[in-house]
Length: 349
Image (cartoon, rainbow, N blue to C red):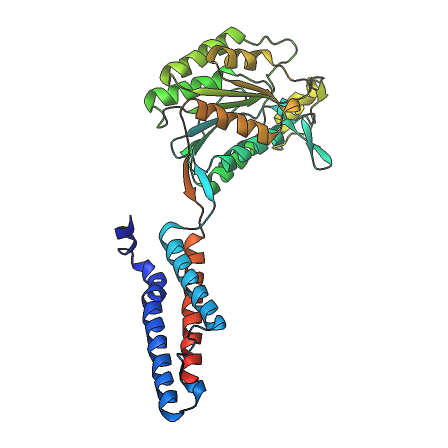
């Protein structure tokens, strides 16, 4: 490790003060001795017969600062000085995001002084997961009546934000089919298995319960088993979004589609509540995690997922955050500046 320190070209800036400092100290000592010899020759008084007290307090302090700054600059350039941060490079997240019409009901939770819709809260969960697991790859599968892969796993922040916004901005359809996103994921993994040994599937939905429509809970569980067959160590995280009581869904069509608006108005005002059984079934059958949006915060969800991953042997890699090399250059420059100041003062004495 020490040998590799000298092989990096950018370390030269931090090593220069360390190499120059001993030479300056030796030069200063020789110079003081020479001056003392001259004083003894020119002055025969008793005050002249003593060795000089070289290394005066101010100069000694500056020399110490130069040494510390040089050493710090060298360390910053080589190993970085940023605070240690977790990198989840071996993790892969698949976000199954319900974008149906019922997800527009504003009964989930408050953000600031106002309520957000179920869909907006689910989007916040997705963004929080991306921030909490740096280095992990994220894919997106939006669904309502049908489902398709919108974004393959990626670590690009801008790409993730773009496709997440695209998923939540698509025209909403009435009705939620929880089988379709699981089927789409199983099909994707059959063609191309996930790169992570323990992928995480995050299913965010209000349950899709509507009057006169039966939820195929058994079929949902069977499809979840197909996903598990494609990746046996998959971790399911099911988040039930919405309130316990029925809430009205805004009647305006987000896409401006006249046919959708007329169809919606003809069926009357849609009122819906969160329906947990299908999401609970998935988490119980696969042994995953289950959360209710009303009972937990975004931070608690991320913390629970991280704890489960580490419990199953998926540990992050700890690395120094960016910025250490810049701090190293600053310290190395400070060390050189102090040495230059000392040599200037000594040359004028």
